[in-house]
Image (spheres, rainbow, N blue to C red):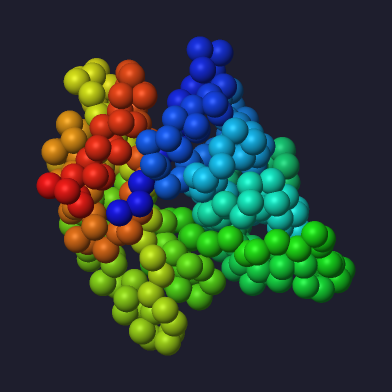
Length: 293
């Protein structure tokens, strides 16, 4: 089981890039950064820049987009950023991508991103990105581009819980990245993913699950994230309880085991509540219990 988490915030409200070293020391496989800029006053940071900062303070941990919104950016720009991060980090990028949420937000409108046809844009981008990153002559619209210096194409994971996202993962990706999904629901989805891969005569993508965890006794944090899952994401209280990872190492290990049994090879948790360093240690210890119960 591979594990990943996001960075904590400093007291000034910015990503604490230096804490990526703490994750690396604990043996985490990757540090994930979300791509969520709304333009309505909600705090948001440019994911490629944050990961560039992480690259400068770490040596081994993977730099994971969780996930990069392709319709917000020209495809050639995404390819250049990916090449740059690969060179800065020694080829540690995990390129999670998706069609993005909140297409009606002020930021989407301000940058002229398409409100419709996001799936078609994403499919086209996924067809072009490998050649662009490898430095091959690639036609983008009316232009033929050769981007240099060439870089290895990173693992590409497709975000989203829909069947369309699963099909994209089968056709264009190395993995599928669903989020906020219970182990039971994931098992059903993984079975469908295998069917889609068989129908397309393609390899079955790896599965990396994203979710939330509160690995302390911070009951206020548990209640807060549960309300968000119910009120914002439309889950029932029972569904929210099945998705949210809570407890100490044995309880967290049980949840990781359930995801592994359902087909996941990676679990990435956003850790909510107090004492982020302690929570990261709990998750690392829980992972170790899977192999040494």
